[in-house]
Image (cartoon, rainbow, N blue to C red; front, side, top):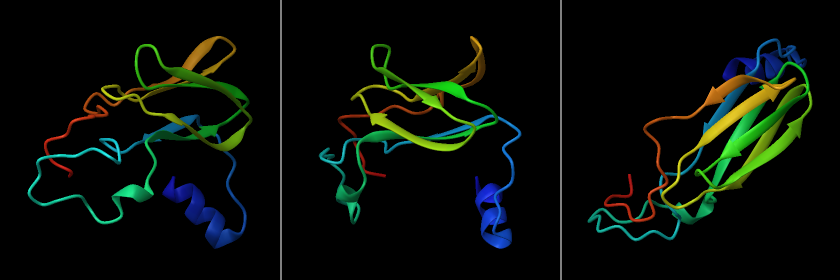
Length: 124
C-alpha cells in the first residue's frame, strides 16, 4: 500500500490499480480482554475497534467476502480502485478475505497464524 499512497502524495495523482490485492488486519484479542500479564494492558488499548479491517485494490468491479469464522461472513460489492471495508470479529475466529469477479476467485487470503483470542495470556 505504501507505494500507491506515497506516489499519490508525491505526484498529486494516484497510479492506476493494475493488480488485484487484498490487505487484512485486526487486533489479536478483544479490547476488554483481561490477561494475567504482569506487564498490564498497553496504553490506549481501547482506541482500536474489535473489527477485521480490509483494504481492497481492485482493478475492476468485484465482490469481496470477509470471514471471521466458519459461520460469520459479509459480502461487499466494490468498484475499481481502493476500498476500505470492515466487519466485526468473532471471538475464537480467524480472518479471511476473498475477491471474486465473474464467478472466479481472484484473491484468497487467510493468514494461518492469526486467531482472535478472547482469553489471551499476554497482551502483546
